[in-house]
Image (cartoon, rainbow, N blue to C red; front, side, top):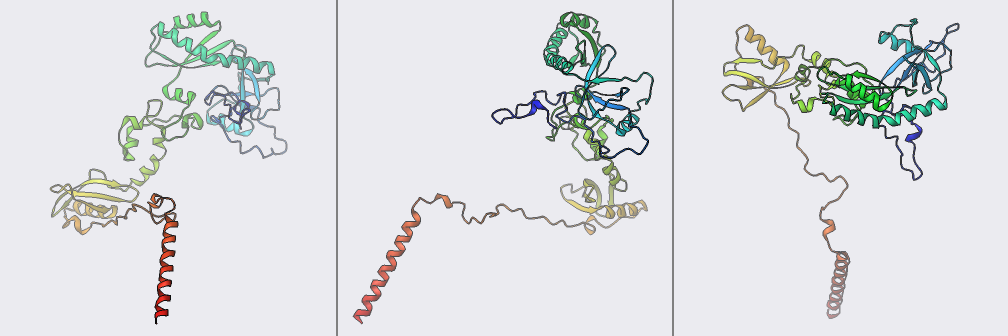
Length: 393
């Protein structure tokens, strides 16, 4: 679903909303949920679930009760209840899937103090909301300047206006506790609005701002990932990754969340796999493990006296030797169990388009015609000589 500001211009070039994934119309599909129950009708006598999920700027989502029985669908702009005044957001989910989402996030259903949806947003509400959104970048820049003047060790990463423009929430990150009382006074005096400061973590900051990861795709936390599980360096060790902080860290400065995606597969494969520090006792000498390939189930060993010469063994063979060593038995040598790996020949050049010569374009133009004329003259001379010989005979 593309928003109107992302449509093409007069010359056919895309205009772009220039909000980098934070547009209010959800045209960039940030944390969207596919409603797979939208085409299914409710059983007779069942009323639709009276809660809706509303998304505000970036990844902030909240649940609101539809007490007015409004006919709402995904993409509708609505005015919702706030602590003071009202807020403007977009409906991202309706129906029974909202019940599932609330249960997963442990939100109370049919609570007496549940926030409500007031109405569908009018054009006046949308104009005020859009005007406030246009001021956010300027106010964020000014707030950072005030924080620098006050010498506060904090980073203001994002600003979010309430839909009616009466309040602005400043999201910041800091390593230590920050006394921002004077900062709130100065900002309230400079901007003339109510100020709320909210501290978030570095991962929440990356989730709100978004970006492109080292894989070339949008950040998982800003597109579909909703919960942040702890990631440790042991996940990289299990997957035999280099412990390089620059490669393992994401844009948030923490370990990448994707290190946990394949961890269960590696742990399952390592259940009956020999350890990395495995030692094999042979009559020829002590052998150490140099390299492992988990999914091919192969290990490379070398003798202590000859570390440069590696021998390939399968997982079952290593377990067999370990079982013998456990019973205080030694095998003759690793060569008895070594596996020969066929090395595929690399093709240096392959003629994929039927071109016989790489220097076919180096010939001067017209060279082919000269050769043809030369051959033709030679044939004529041969015919003349043949006729002369026949006449002389």
